[in-house]
Amino acid sequence: MEPYQLSIISLVILALLFVYLFKHNKSTGIKNKIVLSKPKNKGNNKIKDKDKDKDKDNRVKSLNELSDEDIFYKIKNTHMQVQMIILSILEPYKASNVLLKFRKTNKLIIITKFFILDRLNIESIKKIYNVIETKLEIKIPEKFKLITKFDGIKAISGILFFADLSDNNLLNEVKEYNSRIAEKIFEKLFYFEDLINLEDSDCKLLLKNISMKNLLHSLKGCDPVILNKFINNLDKNISIELKEKLDSYSPVKISEVEFAQREILKEFAKLVEQKKVELFINLNKIAS
Image (tube, rainbow, N blue to C red):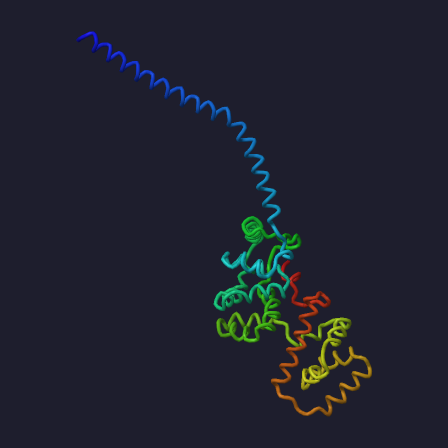
């Protein structure tokens, strides 16, 4: 081999060695930088995690802070048990507003499946609460965290009292969809006759918001016990006038009686919503 050929080979070997050493030192330098920077990143990550936790705490809202629309959009695509629990712990009038936002089929499925809440044990309830607070970012009221059992039929009955006043065809739709479950729900619904259970002070307040015409029509042919309940809570002069008009009043169509009773229930519902009177099927009693 000629001397110049050896020189070329030597140069090539030196060049390859130089490239190898350059790449090795570069990669080692990067690794060292990564190792050295790890503690700094850990500290930054902790700060970022804390910031994320604070942001999450700020995002969690109580049910009272959320509008009906907000609640609907948070729960519309969740598991049905989550939907029913949320509706159960809402005030009945607010729950009815949320329920009515669902499509007809979904709404009827939810209504007729409410009875399954009775089957939930305390562990299942806690798991659902955890989903509501962590995934949906809705704070559960403390009083509901102590419950051990829900009464699903009673809960949906209270909700339907208000929903029916907004959609007077809803109960018929429920009956057509599932007559067996509908019958159980209807047994616990709040009806005009249930106003007999009003406290006298609440009854007086309700009467102030009812027209004489609706009062006359609603009491035409009703149970004497209901009639006496209203008469005894009217001013003496008005009660005398009411009795006289009832005796001389011409016959009223059943449809007119039902309309008047419905109007009175609407006034009662307004007072419940304003927290001036209490609905007997109230959500403080659906859990034990």
